[in-house]
Amino acid sequence: MSKAKKTYLAIITLCLLTIGFSFYYILGGFDEVQVYFFRGMERTVIGKEFVIKNDHKAFTSQMDSVKEDFMNGVLKGKLTALIYQDEWQEKDSLHCFLGVSQDSTSGVVRLPAGYEYRKFSTDRIYKTFISQSVWVAPSPASIEEMMEVKSIEEGEVLQPITFEIYYRDGSRSIEKWVK
Image (cartoon, rainbow, N blue to C red; front, side, top):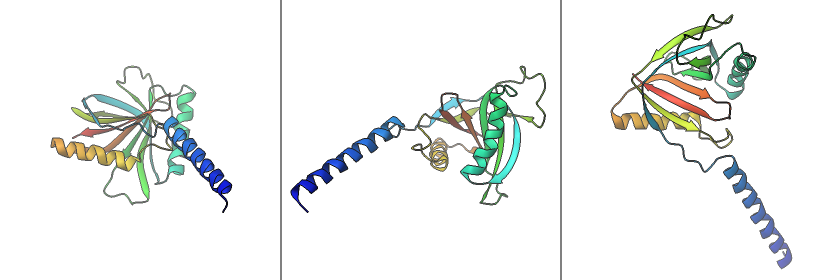
């Protein structure tokens, strides 16, 4: 290979690496995910319960149906997904409750057709804030593992439920509540 070809190959490789790192930076890939500790609260979630295949496509499909009611104003609150870690469920299935969360039921005059509400309360919460794009964000399993490690360090046991709250700017928070 001639010296000119090697030079062009080096320049192209350098440009591609620069573009790759730039996209990674823009998508938030270098943002560190930290686990924070919050005082407890009470939360009401209005939604629908699903047991679906444990893959991104099935989850997105069900979440889109709830998101449509949210965008049309049928549901008011923060778009929320509750993921249950049931011992009895099969490895390829996902037990979830999808809807919106509210701090109280006082603003709810009546439930939309097909929806139900559930109340949750705790004294302590472990929470992370994810601002990265889904393309570069850590996996839900790794985030839950970080929370488990933090709770074990603090000597606490977590409930087998994960709250994922989605915000309009594309960010989300993931919460694990203490028993």
